[in-house]
Length: 145
Ligand SMILES: CC(C)(COP(=O)(O)OP(=O)(O)OC[C@H]1O[C@@H](n2cnc3c(N)ncnc32)[C@H](O)[C@@H]1OP(=O)(O)O)[C@@H](O)C(=O)NCCC(=O)NCCS
Image (cartoon, rainbow, N blue to C red):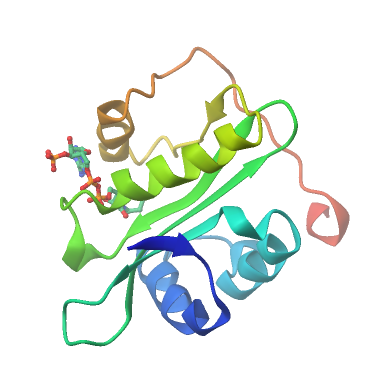
């Protein structure tokens, strides 16, 4: 089942992200990302819950989406390593895309690290295409120093 984040999900999401995004920089600490996302379009923070394993609620996937008024973005698309290739991320992406479309979002963007080529195949399976763009970024506030 894919549904929006609820607070009791937090500890399992932190464990999932610490595993899947182990080399993320300190400013992407899971607690920070979760707290920040909950302040902006929290209804577009999706989790996939597996109830079938032991009758317990297990968070097996996440997707964070957001609409900036011009484009929609996807972040933290992750499926627990024991649950991959079962369509979980595809389901979450569809739910997030529907949420963005409902807000009037005309196009989705996402970023993939150059070292993460395998995931390109996943996005291509959902009809995303590699575009000829140069990605640029700048950190703001205290993280910008
Ligand atoms: C990428 C990721 C989210 C995919 O999750 P998933 O739940 O396994 O994806 P799905 O089951 O919905 O995959 C749908 C299709 O995508 C393609 N696909 C998924 N993972 C793939 C891989 N590692 N290599 C090639 N194709 C892949 C396949 O076509 C697959 O369909 P199939 O299983 O019938 O062949 C998952 O591998 C993951 O969490 N990776 C680590 C985190 C990450 O890199 N996130 C993206 C950051 S940009």
